[in-house]
Image (cartoon, rainbow, N blue to C red; front, side, top):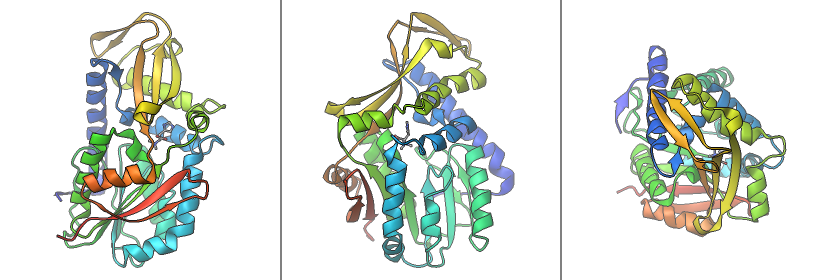
Length: 327
Ligand code: AVJ
């Protein structure tokens, strides 16, 4: 575990750095074949707000289902976590689900929300501070896929519970997922725990509907990545020239979100020219779906011991409680 600072004065430089890394990855991805953007590209202030709206769409069962599972198991979860834990949340966004834990945790030693969107992160931290004035809230604006520093006020002896809800793990392919889950053991430390939400394989029509909501919010969210590049990398993407697509790919057990170029076109970005063929895909996100067993296999490969798992009655979503061995 490295140490750094999350003092208020560091908030702006932190979020500027997280944004720079995303934009650099976007430029690299546009030069790759197939072209792709890092999912972190979605989460500027507007994208984070659009994501909160996705969570309310009737087709997007993930948030509702996970929240119901957490509500039903919160008492048992906090008992398993024990007293005085430091709660570290990765991709914390609006910190909504976290409150189910904060309402019941036994004298937590602090809460460290980690998010790439400075606006969403610092607003959420302010709201959490207001509702839980006794809680030490230490936001860190960072891309959790690269090494990030825990606040310097965190002691290496503190017991850590990592909270990684939302099936964000699905954004990573299996090998990246194992690598990230190993890195989380580094954050959790010996004897640390991980509470992670994982979306489950189900009927294709429901999976595809969740990423193609009738109100078109997911399409707006997807296209927002281009809008952001236009603003932040002085690109000239024509948002009318690309179409949202989200397709289930059974062989890889994932939804692929793409922006499909409607015609042959050129886009200028940071002094370069990128060519798109008609029908060419720009991959913006992969959302892998697991079974309880296939996820446990991944967790074990990263050195975690699966202890408990909860699902909703329909088996749509799972919440796992994993332990990192003490030695
Ligand atoms: C935040 C990665 C869990 O994969 O369902 C929602 C993001 N993308 N709709 C997901 C998302 C399109 C979401 N995760």
